[in-house]
Length: 193
Image (cartoon, rainbow, N blue to C red):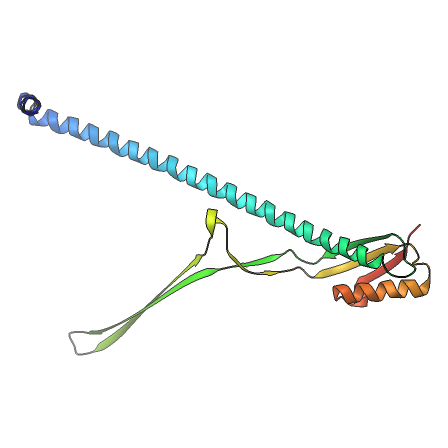
């Protein structure tokens, strides 16, 4: 160990101060450039993975919206086909909006009040308010959802065997209005071929 220190001292004695400062400056610049490049690559990796996660979440939520409409249609077809005088049933439900998810938030609010006296005897009060809002995430970075608001039904078309009979058609019409909670002007019932 002592031999290494002695060799370093001899090397530093041989090099004049200007050359030493020049070499240290070059090493410093190279180090700064390497740190900047490493930081850029780290940010790209983090940004790329979060954008992929966001895209997956969007795809999952849009699949849920499609499934929500399909689930409603299937349930409606199943229940309507059980009515007396009704055969095969096809239903189409149009939704007004998409599913709205309300995420959980952490809100931090800081209030700071400062009273100052100036040199002329006057006072002034400085009030500083800071508010920080953060979205709460669960495991694997998934959002924690407090509430989901289902879309409202925009319109319904039902095509059923037996709907050419006015009494059956009226039962279908009333059943759709009741089960979906929609007004009559948004429901149409037709007889199938």
